[in-house]
Image (tube, rainbow, N blue to C red; front, top):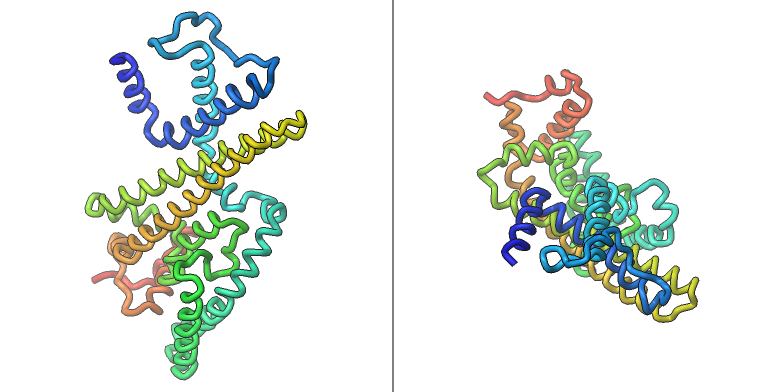
Length: 340
C-alpha cells in the first residue's frame, strides 16, 4: 500500500491536479465504459476486454492487471489530447464552435424568444443610454430630460424582470447570446465589466490578475478553484455525453434495450454534470465581477493613468486603453490623462 501511495503522489506532483481531475478522470470514465460495459460481456457476448499488456500475469503493485493498465494508459493518452483542447471544449459547450448555431438553431431560437421577453426592452434602453452618454462625452452637454426618462424606464424594466427572474441567466446584449445555458452563463460573466465600466474582460483580465497579485490571493484562489470545478464538470459531461451517444447508437444497431437503458442513465448523468458546470460558471461570474468592481483601478495605477471622475468618463477611458492594448497605436494612449 505504501508503494501505491507513493506512486499516486508522484503522478499528482508531476502532472498536476487540473490534468488529473479535468483530463485523466473523465477520460478514465470514457475508456472504462467502453472497455467494461459497451464492448464487453454480457452486452457483447463474443467480446473480450482489450489488454495491451498480456505479459502482466501478476497484478502490478498488487492491484493493476493487464486490462486495468490498458484502461489507465488509454485514459492518459486521451487526457494528453483533451487537456490542451480545453478552450475548444468550453466553446463546444457554449455552442460557439463554427456551425453550431446552425446545428442548434431550435435551441437558439428558444433562447432568442426568452431573451426578447425578459431582456429585450432593457437592452434597448441601455443602448439609448450609452448613446446619450457618448453624445455628452463628445459635446460636453447632456439632455437631462431624456436621461431622467431613460433612468425611470430602466428602473421599472429591471424591477419587472427581477420578479420573473431574480438571477441573471442571459447577457443583456443580444449579440452575446448563445444557444446553450452554459454559453449564456459565460456570456454574463464576460458582459459584466463591459456593461458597467466599458472594460473588455478578454483584454484586461490577465492584467487584473497581475495587479491584484498576492494582496488578493484568496479571491484569486477562489476564482481558480471555480474554474477548475468548471473544467472538471464539463469534461465529465463530455465523457458521459459521448458514452451516452455511443450506447444509444449501439443499442439501435444491435436492437438491444439494455444498451438503450444504459444510454438513458449516462444521459441523466451527463445532464447533472452539465447543470453543475452552469452553476459553477455563475458562481465564478460573481467572483470575477467582484474582482473588477474592487480592483480595476489598480490597472490604471499600473499604467500611470488618472482615475476617472465618473462612470461616463470611465467608460470612455477603458475603451481608449483597450484600443491601445489591442492595436498598439500610441495616439489612443496619448488621449488619456496621466496620474500626477
